[in-house]
Structure formats: structure tokens, C-alpha cells
Length: 353
Picture 1 (cartoon, rainbow, N blue to C red):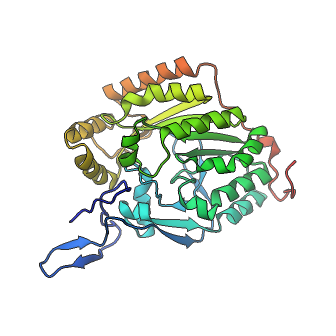
Picture 2 (cartoon, rainbow, N blue to C red):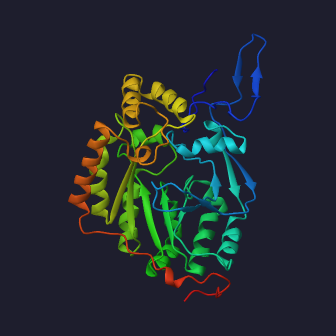
Picture 3 (cartoon, rainbow, N blue to C red):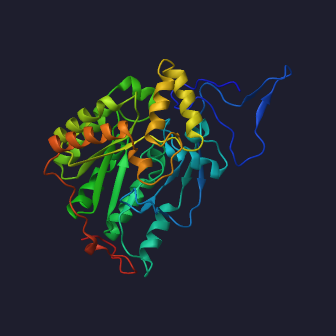
């Protein structure tokens, strides 16, 4: 397979969808087939419907059990993104297809409102987003995330947000109002401080410097912020973890978390290709260290281990994180959510108090 180098994209090619028996290629008389991709693939947005806006997660690894995902696929192009595999369920590929075919759940705001109005609904923290970034470039046009936040404010429903994009600043007015009522936590994902690394690891995300500036801005306005140093990749970005926590704390962050990289499904092949392309001198070493975190395999489904890893490297990471968090974030905590304000179950008033 001829793998095109797509500038500004994370994946270097489009692997076959494992659920499809046939693959579309461009046929040459010489007998060489290659995937239909160009060096500058364009992004396509496809509008789809949604019945249930709440995705349930039963994993004990995660503190939030429900997420709302206004988009499927993500133009940010993070090569390590676990959500790549899920794109195959929609009929697309987990490589360049994940980055260039974005499904827009056009009626998700209305669907969430309907869920809140159900008499049997019990408020619980929902995460924007558990799968792909709710502030990816598509949000500039479709504004679904803003609509979801407006819905949460109208119903006084708690929400947690995690993003790598400073587009979230556009919705500062809503976040300020939610924060006043203890209904929102905002987390910024920062896993390195090297802008040159960003351009290949997660090419269409905001720089760490811009996210740190926004943490300071939000914190000053009373919006509680945390930082997720995730994922940590041995041989690629471990050296920045403590500094990221320090800089985030200096900006006003009150909490930090981390995960280690895991490469389930087709992520293993995509990440190997990425390493060979950008870091050929250390590719084998990085993969071996990742395997050491996950019981000798790249694909890890064991709860607990899949998020934090195990073994000598995992223990080193844990100690580094705990030391940095104790030094820079001691005494700080996210405010508790206020569930008593919820106005759902058919009791919505038109205007929040």
C-alpha cells in the first residue's frame, strides 16, 4: 500500500475497515493498487441523527459514567486517540478517515433536553466529550457544544468538559454562569510543551502555551480548571509532566490527572507507522516501553492497568506525578457539584434564576 504523507494530519494512511469485506482503491494497469487519498485530504461533514444523546460508560477507571458526544471523528488528528477504532462502526476508517470524515449529530441538543425532561431521569455529571473533542474545528460552524451548555444551564445540570482547543473561550459567558452555581469543571488536555511535537502528534490542537493562558483567564473569572497530562508516552513526552503540572498550577489549575498511552485495535499499526515516519531511531524502544506498561502487549483491556499501566515505568510515572501534584497543587480541589438545582423531570422554567 502506498502511504501518502498528509500534511497537517496525524495518521499517514487509511487502514482497511475491519468490518468491511471490500476496499475502494485506484486501479493501475501496472497492477499496483493504492488507496484513494491525496497529500492534502479535505474534511467532509456529514449530518446524522441521534436518539439517545447519553453514552453510558461502565468502566471503574473513569469518574464520570455518562458522556455526550456531538461529533464522531475528530479533525484534531491525535495519532494516539482511542476513539479512532470506533469510527469503523460507522463505516469509515480509523486513520485519515477518522480525521477527515466528521459526523455531526445535528439534533443532539434537542435530544439532551428531552432526556432531562423525562420524569425518570436522575441528574448525574455528564462529560463533554468522552469520545472526540467537543471543541474540534466543526464546532465553529455547528455550535452544538454551545447548545449543549445552554441546555445544561437552563436545566441547572452539572457538566464536565475536557478539550485541547481554545475555541472553548467563545463560551466563557456560559461557563461563568455555570461556575457561579457549581455546575461545571473544565479540564485542558496538555501532554507536552514542544510545539514541534504538537505539529505531528496532535496537529490541529492548540499549543500548550495558549491552553495555559486560557487556564489563567478562566481561573481569574471563577471557572474551575484542571489539567489532564494525557496520554503519557515513554520516550516521547514523559519529561514534560512535572513542568506541565507546575505551569498549570501557576495559571490557577486546581487539579491534575494523567493516563498512559494504550494502543488497542488498529491504533497499534497506526502508531507504529507514525513512529517509523517521525522517530525511526527510537521506534522499537518506544513500542517496547509501551508494551511493558500493559503486560507485554500494546492492546490492553484490563481495568486499572489500561489507564495507569503497571511495572517499573508505570511506577516511575506514578511517583513523578504524585510528587509534582503534592508540590504544586497541595490544598487545591475542584468544587463539589450542586445537584439540588436541577430543574428537569418536566419542571423546567424558561429562564434560569
